[in-house]
Image 1 (cartoon, helix red, strand yellow):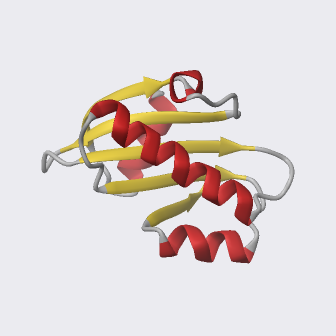
Image 2 (cartoon, rainbow, N blue to C red):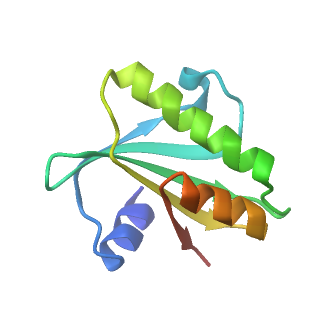
Image 3 (cartoon, rainbow, N blue to C red):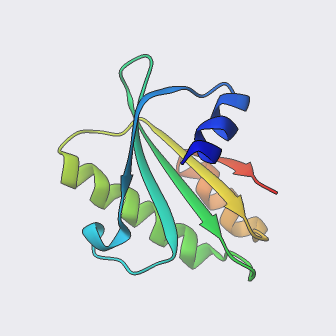
Length: 109
């Protein structure tokens, strides 16, 4: 988690609290790390870390949005900011769809 906090700080994103959420809690087995944070301005933010060797396709972009929606339901509040830290090739259509849905994408590595 320290690595993620430092990476976000380098992008000028600071969270007061950061809690790890297991994908199983949201009904998924995907290999994605999910974090729920509270920013300095008291807004919730979702941080998802995706590491893979294969390309991330549009279908997976939709699945990430669904995970985000399930997390909103679980905590019972709206999550204003969505960040994706990705260490994988990203399909241009998937990137466009994620940005359209309000995700801020950061490339790692």
